[in-house]
Length: 505
Ligand code: HEM
Image 1: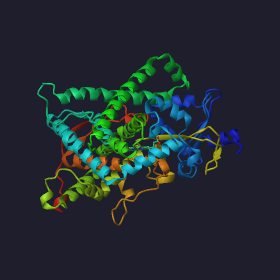
Image 2: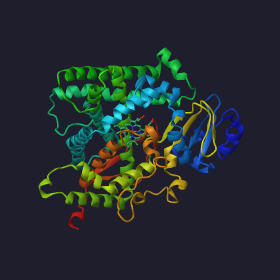
Image 3: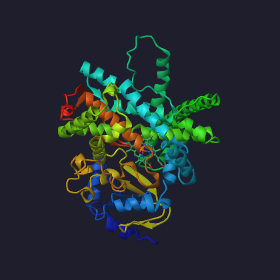
Image 4: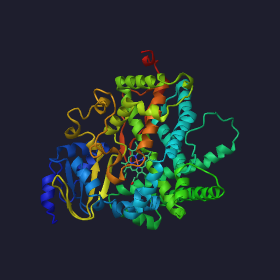
């Protein structure tokens, strides 16, 4: 299709006129402290919730919050919209050819192998066991200590540590010990503690590598990072060092795992499974897959839960309903089983309101707020927007979660009930193209089920025992990098939960 650029721009930029030479830079700079909300307002003003963007010296592209466009790009037009060469080159040093960073046959092969493993009953059981161990062995004891000391904690940091320990165990049965064990040390450095120092360095290096790689997307002069990389300067030098640390550490784990497996040792983590099923896979490919999983599972669930607990602090009615549901599930337990601390998969499945409350929170505070693909050939989106070959197409799931056209007039309200069947009270899923929080189409998130197991277990067990008090005046500032985080964390005071009366009903 031939493309009339001027016509497309004129049609799709009311309310956001580009300045001569500067493009949209002035508006962007004026709103950069509230970038997600500003983008939402701009997109809501477009006739079809879609914006054509062109900046001098940059690749033109489209940003959309229109579910029909999202469905087209992620499903019907999937082959025309890979991640593309820009995404791959920016993240290649860190992610190599891991599942998050490849297209075509390489992606298909990894997706097939990983989704097979993710759907096995035994991996699910391993996930549940890992979530349970980290929750009862570390997170809940930490909250108990905070409740008795009365000292506030940063909940975002705590949840990020939890998520990193958890995903490292699931991906390659490694424990980076980001949350301390229950037992308080006696001052003598044990083997486990010195191991923890190395693991801590791994976690720090991983965080640096992820942040510095994401920073490459934000250069005002595209490609400047390549010059810095060639000269070994500043952030690029730090990136090279942190990536070397992460890769070296992962390589050592992979080598020793091969030896253990050669001796007949059976493990249940993803790496061991892929080694067993994909015999000829090289160590580099395995490392790349593992690192992609760590990145995907690291800050997503912690972002979701941080915003969730913040929202809950101003919605006591929702908190009370969650406590009642959790208490009711607990009360249905067989008598002999009452001592078992956690909730099993069937019990988590019964928690429809908890599921709805978390889902609703991610609608408003989407952990991965934007996602971009690359148009290989020119195309026309369902709303009539013309896309040129080589353009980027971004869908903004944060804005989509707040569109009145999608969710109705109360789109901005936090209302878990919208996800429940009014008669049965059961959870009703929405089309993934309207609720694109987990992406959609063939590349939909592979860890969605694991994420819900983790998030529901934490919410149920934490609220059963504690109340997390947030200062009512605290207004978190957003930072949107790869995930949506709070710039200054989430300070909370941990208190004992009020006693629920659901079990007496
Ligand atoms: C609330 C939690 C989560 C959210 C909101 C979320 C969201 C997403 C999104 C938006 C994508 C698409 C990213 C892209 O294409 O660049 C994605 C992909 C992916 N996610 Fe998640 N995710 C979550 C948790 C997890 C967890 C815990 C894991 C690991 C077990 C995981 C594993 C993956 C993988 C492997 C992909 C790549 C799939 C592919 O390209 O075929 N996710 N996720």
